[in-house]
Image (tube, rainbow, N blue to C red):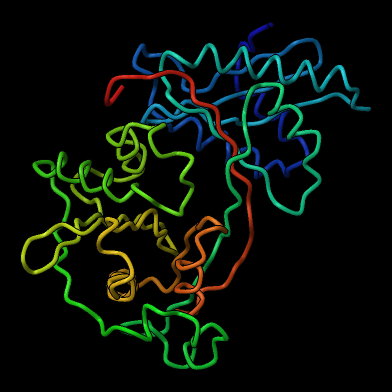
Length: 319
């Protein structure tokens, strides 16, 4: 294995099929990532012969597969070589990570890429729907969207219960432990990528979610009933022209009681109050109750991806 003296060269090589502008934008994004705990770059790039690859170490002890370059024509031995190279890069990153992840886009010809991942020890864990909703007004549970949606008669949560009152407790540093506890509880019995339950430390997960947000401006809330019983958490992330619903989860005993509709109304109103009119999310295709709710609210599927993962090692919290 030979290290690239400049990881930007490897990134450009691995994404040579993209436009020059797209490659430059990616390099700029990677350059803004915080350095590792030892002061080293978060991007690890190397090659074996003509095969090149890079991985990225993100805040929260997460490593992602950035890209792979294979010479043309592609030979079986080059695929094996790429898998071995990824494996070596992952080993180099393991002291700072607890999980390696990668995605492939459903509908693309991913056989070669998936073969590389398999050689590197990654496993396919879930297919995710990427969904989007255009918000039209306060409350943003568009009556017109609901009436025209084919799923309106199938969503038990809205046919059997009225909206319920929820207290939204905003994030602050003093509540960090409480957020971690709430997050842990929502993972129990989850239908959204249950394979990750117990793999990642929740403190590290929150560090990863917070990476693009100022500490004083995290749009995160613990969800409570009026009796102060914690029932879940909601995490949003605003961008220049849309808001991402990063995570919403309820504890097992609070599911199916009508909370989800109220939570989504709150998320939509928060988005509109900031002058934004688009909200996006990703959901496991196996999570049929959530998908029915999102479709009922007017969300549309705009794409699908497959998630891959490989645990690296058991690490202490906030590594």
